[in-house]
Image 1 (tube, rainbow, N blue to C red):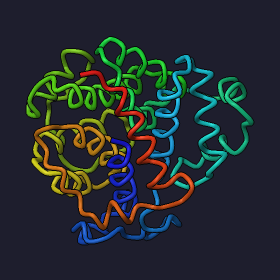
Image 2: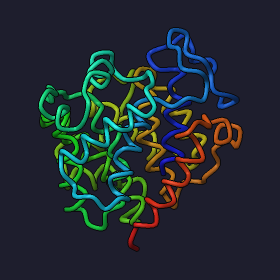
Image 3: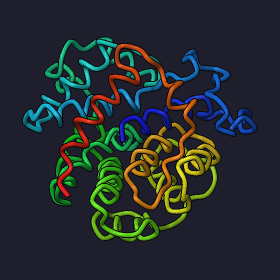
Length: 278
């Protein structure tokens, strides 16, 4: 889950809000974004915050705002990187720990930050637990109905696939039975910054794709906030029995290999998925 999430994020990062790059969406390589400084194959905040969530899960720590905020700050401080919104990047540079984070954060966003990091929450065994834990983590930074609902939907996507709760084509209807939103309505066109937009686009791409390679291409074809769309969709798709796991080896192997790069991600991923109870 985490490895595929990171590949989707890193691949999509070269195309984020850059429609002029559309002709390069052939999965042949990671591409350099025309305006960002991230090197090809580097992941962004979508992956870094998902790693923070996964680390809290595998640690068995109490699921509290303070523990989650501490994890967000620690993940950033050990490996500062671009990809965050500029204001949040500066905020993370400023705060010392989770307590200061919670004291100073303005957490009323309805954008995609809580949804992009929610996929690991899907490992919990019941829908009720996934919903509640996704809500808690989302409310720290995205304490709005749309921000919270998008995060719950993203977490339930991976849960639905991990626990084989139904066919791929019924995913939207399943989500609509548990969280407000028009999740079965197909998304078309550019994906803007709202969290529900990224989740809707991810659902649309996943339900239309039989292979991970097609899923990744479809996510990027939307244009706009495509690294987030791809992170959410590939995390769920990697757990779906109906989706062929055919991501190109050169993208998997080309994912950044830093201290918290591919090897670390794969190790954490194995620990996370070992918690799934079938």
